[in-house]
Image (cartoon, one colour):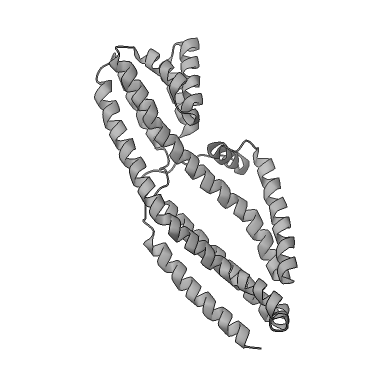
Length: 298
């Protein structure tokens, strides 16, 4: 009777050590600024959904999370015949969707910053052809990558309607809250205030910074991909082991996991695995996570 629990807890210990090593291997990243805004929970959630490019409301997102939790909880109970597994499955389904949101949001923000490189190239080419800044911005609104095009269409439209480039830039920057976009806005505003002087060298320096940032992120993401998959496999292994035991050795699995100690063991394994993966994932993502906007220095 004690053979199963001993093997399981030994496996859990080895899993914890491996996940700890994987977490230490991740490259840390320090945030130089963090935006703090007094918003409601639904307001903050809606902002994240917009940044992730998910065309749903915060209320719809919460309903979907609860539905996934119920479905995964039922599936876990069918596979293991354990109430504790059903509870963990429900929690995993609910919070797993949140993890998906965070991952998609960070990928979208990284793609946005890399797309700004094309925008800078368009602005440089437009200004080099002796066009004015408004004309260069109109070119960006027409030819920029899709992920950033809407913002520059808005800037060009507002500039046409109100003839106030600074207000249009600040409005988009306040909504987007992207560090690279903020630096571009500062350069354009400074150019506007000084009568169109010295924008070319500033754009060239910003272009080099964005290129270096994008290149570094791609290298780190590639190096972390194998580690992330190994961590996923390791964290899911205990539950796979329980399902296999139920199919191959029900007399061994059934009595133990039906007992109070077995239920506690499932909960402990689930919490340890989920927490270890979450910590590893968050530490690893810091190396490629876009910095929070420090705001535009007007």
